[in-house]
Image (cartoon, helix red, strand yellow):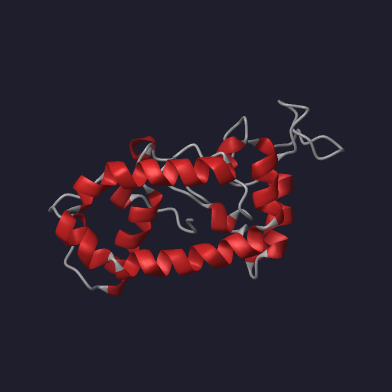
Length: 177
């Protein structure tokens, strides 16, 4: 799994470009998602997302994915779960102080961000702490709801199929694959 995660960072540019197209496709499918009901499709979509992102990024399904902002290196793989940069314990060889045989997630994040246009700049955006209520929810569906709400194409709550949004729908961090 670790080798695939490192491969994903090395291929961050292509994966980011693919995700941008995938995200646009998901946004175009909003009317279908709304017709089916976001609550109804949440579980199966989250399962697919977990399988795909689990393989490529060792995803922890935090529901607030920031892979596009971290060079396709998931900060949730940091033993300390740091979302805004490395701790003070990064070893001279770039490895983690907690897991000495593992490269620091943030060293890899910087390498991956160098491969993505605007990637290094996006790393400077502060990421909010993980809202644990979003754990296990699909960040893909959250992004669709956020994009639709930002465009103003649906009344508040309509994108989720109810008047009250789920925690995954209301989470604020951006930059999601």
